[in-house]
Amino acid sequence: MTRIKSGLAVALLLFGLVGSTVWGGDRTRPTEPNPYDKFRRLDDRTRSRGAMSLRDELAFAEMAHQEIAKQYRLVNDPVIVAYVNRVGQRVAEVSGRPNLPYQFYVVDNDQINAFTPGGGRIYIHTGLLKQATTEGQVAAVLAHEVGHNVGYHLSATLRRAQTTGILVGIAGAILGNGVAGSLAQLGIALVANGTMFKRSRDQEREADFLGLYDLYHAGYNTDEMNNMFRLLASLMRRNPGAFDKIFASHPPPAERLRNTQREILQHLVGSDRRGVRTTQEFVNIQRRLGVTGRALPPSPEDEDAILTAGDVSDDPSEPQSAEVTYEEAEKIFARAGLRSVTPLRAVRGDLLGGTRLTDTVIAYADNGRVGALVDLGGRIYPLQVEHQGQVQLVLPLQPDDVMAVGIIPVASRRRAQVVVVSRKRGEYVWEWTGRGFRYLGEQ
Image (cartoon, rainbow, N blue to C red; front, side, top):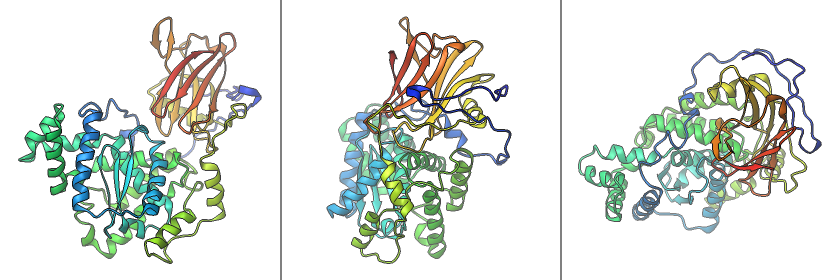
């Protein structure tokens, strides 16, 4: 891609706020392959969506929950349960499947464990809540389990169950639009033999990848996922036998730590130096569980981050922006599979209406045709338009017509607008739905 001349203005011009870009020079990049690259451009269609209907997934999760409630003692302390749900919902609502009816449960067990049968049902053991030292570490674990739901890993579990003896007929019935009786039988069988909670190592890596970005977009410091892996490594060294069964399918903590550190270095620079690490509420919950002296108290920086992490502007006249470097645009184009394209206008902001300025909108020219895309947490969304009754990726504009792009926060945490401004035709507007973008038309 031809380097952009220093005089090119890449700015947010909406509502009078102007910002100019800095196109940086080449920088040293890590040479080791990033194992998360294989997950970067996956979406619902390329994961396991469709192998099991949402209706069956939710029904199965309910059947599995009934069996889990028989085999495990669930904590009914409303303060602890409400806290875990608040943290869990915070990461779930910024995930790739925000509309699942997520429910978070606490298992009264001192094992270091968390699991999900799918369908938005997520369980965390009190042992993990007691051993964690920050809320960010708890959020990282819950975000990982949300990642299994976003990755549709339940479908893969059912496919694997088809090859295991008595489960063959039951799992086959589910994948072929099975009935409630099969759901109940399979839920009981998979929970009873532990198959339900076993994932492949690549599924665990994908859940780490998805969870890292959910942690990031929820306003937590991403280094807390690293700290969770460090904690797991320390606990496993002290008592290796206690983790053999639970984490047999997981990559070693040292590998998971390297993977997230590399992802942060390459794609989330600085996210491990800002954001919420912990809260006083977490400290209080540990005390309620009988733990004293382990949790880290929140710092003044944590308190500031807590106040701003969920901020949403109700006034669209005050959007926020930040510079977009040449290197950032180049990486986004590479991930989107675009070659020989030229950025026309670009801006960074926050689609959740906060102040983290992590999402990038770029309008670009490709052989005289104009397109636009959004990079949200490593996920690329080409912005489609409806023109003359047809849906297409190309805007009905000439490159010189593109005047500005912008991110406009709105009142809901999962909604924002992305705008491409034309000098002649007005504004092309898309709305963020939590899963993707809906075109609202020309305004």
